Amino acid sequence: MKYINILGATLALVLSFTILNVAVADSGKKHHVVFHITDNDPAKWGQVLNNAGNLQKNIGKDNIEIEVVANGPGLDMFKLESQVGERMSDAIKNGIEMKACATTMKAAKLTEKDLFPGVTTVPGGVIEIMQKQESGWTYLKI
Image (cartoon, rainbow, N blue to C red; front, side, top):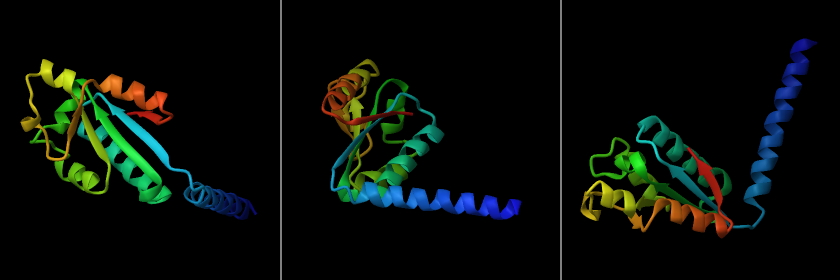
């Protein structure tokens, strides 16, 4: 009896997540998400890229606009020799925008030539985040 209750609860949970995914995907609303990362830890970057890819998969690539903004030490993963370069390249090909903070770049004496292909710059990472939030974007800090 205990196993039947657990099985029933598990099935109900899976079904509710499936219904939620379908409801979000079918809402017709274009979603906007900005990820903010200030850390150069490859595991955290992997989490950002996983989350961004999963959002596209579950909501539909055409139903969501995603931007990853890095500043401070997080900018290291936008460099040419990035440890997550291959994954980042795939994300860029899938329409996920990568934005580097020009203020951090200036302090680190980096130029756009030092950045991974496809990464663009914004005047300030926190300015970009602020403007996205003021425009109604969902903010996710990793």
